Amino acid sequence: MAVGRSLTPFYIGLAVVAVAGGALIYRSMGSRASAAPGALPPPLAVASGPRGVVMGSDSAPVEIAEYSDFQCPFCARFAVLQLPDIRDRLIATGRVRWRFMNYPLDGHPNTRPAHLAAACAREQGKFWEMHDAIYQGQGDWAESRHPERFFRDYAERIGLDRGRFDQCVDAQHAMPDVEADKLRGDSLGVNSTPTFFVNGRQLADVPTYDQIKAIVDSIAPVTPPAAAAPPRAGAARR
Amino acid sequence: MRHRMAAAALALFGLLLSIYLTLYKLGFTGPLVCGTGGCERVQTSRWAELFGVPVAAYGVAAYLALLVIAMAGLSEQRIADPAPTKWLLIVSGAGVAFSIYLTSLELFVIHAICRWCVASAVVITAIFVVSLVGRKGEWGVGSGT
Image (cartoon, rainbow over all chains, first blue to last red):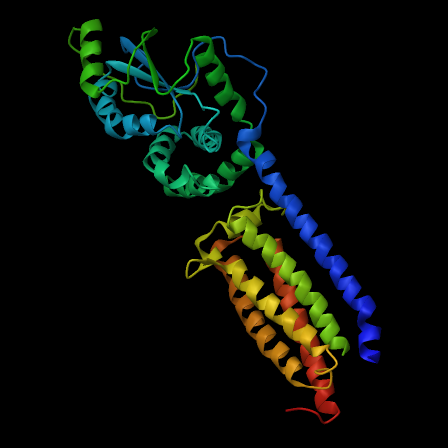
């Protein structure tokens, strides 16, 4: 019994450490929601004009703005099935200028980290590569508790400077641009994704490549410009 | 007896550390409090899992085993038994070897240092050292097995 009595303070000390450590861990679990980029308050600044990320020629007769959410399955389907044809046949030929507008929906908990990752890729001139990777991998990260891990993998895969990317994501200084796009969409009455505007006129549905081509043909039926500018990945905001 | 007390305290610390890292890996906590950013890089690397299980979870198992062994060794029935110290030495020795492997990966493959992982490596090494000292003491009184 002598041993038991002499160890009592030691056991009490262990119990205190265990409880304190458990409390700290529990507290870190509570910080998960507040630490997520999606928990950031919206920026105060409101974009007054078109923003987003542009791909295509400045002289293209048709501009299509797409308000898109990276976690939206319809947006992913469009990006994977329709956009490649649009890119190759309409944007690369100088007939269409494409404007991606960030429209992260509040009901999608992982979408803001995705938009942030794309915005950070844009800083290194690889927005569209990240755009494609995010949509193609949507099924992997959409329900993940740590979607940012997938985005880091994508960053490495598309050849981003990982240090700069991590720094951009951690600082979250690109988020105001994302939220500004969303506010711009709100001001235009956008309430679902994807929503398209062709030369400023909203389309009622999600178009297929054929439908978009028909619209472009109706607006600019003349033969495409002879010297079509190549698509500009990650072109500057305007 | 003192080396078992020290081992128990260290094992508890290591256990809490491993639980924290495991919960992070499983997605139950926010970003790791690290300071350098290396923790996230290490924990999101492909070496942060072994056979589909987070490496930190192996740490939980090891530290839990060490804590149980050390506490059992402090009981009246086992206080004079050298076996718990022997097992502390074996388990912590394996932990030290695994920590050397993981730290090498951090230094030479991942090129990032996770402070929590280093802390765990220090803890397991400390348990090994105190167990070794305790074992020598037990040999010294002629009770080795």
